Image 1 (cartoon, rainbow, N blue to C red):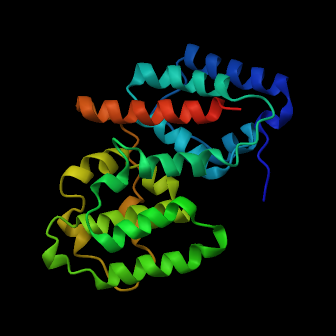
Image 2 (cartoon, rainbow, N blue to C red):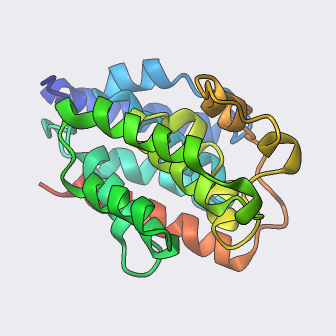
Image 3 (cartoon, helix red, strand yellow):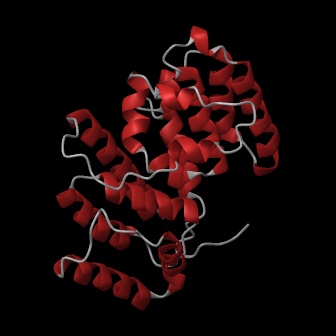
Length: 238
């Protein structure tokens, strides 16, 4: 297992990262619409790519004033020398099992719920067989009996999380939240599903929308703030 030791155990690097972010904000050079070099960020802070993608996504989807605060706060919160390898797995469990907003709360199908429950203790060597189970359920779904495609969407989310397709998944936070209570798949996309499925994640989540919606609902803002608060807690915990 790789170690991801925050700031390479160098307090000066942490100060440099915070100062650099402050200067970008002060110079009006930090934008939610700009390209965020996730690999460079991950290398500098020493975080797994999945975690770096999550940090980027929260920054993009928070209201602008809160996003700039988040950009500084998350850097300050990470202890120098902390191994960040378990932050994303712990966040993933919370995202699934949170008693109020956990994704499992929206799953009614017993077979799909069993897969969600198994994710709580899924080991890396079990992941390929777990993906096969998801693909089998996808192939067996009767879309005609699920007009809103909720079961398919729940399986897509689950597969994305297991494969750590965080760029595709978390870039679509509005879709992730709003679709749990509405129609998750646009008709044009649901009609394109084939048996292969290999490229479906990229097709569905591949177009990252970095433009913050000016008409975000209060429920959506609450949800993104809850994501940011939980991640801040996990980043800062020792």
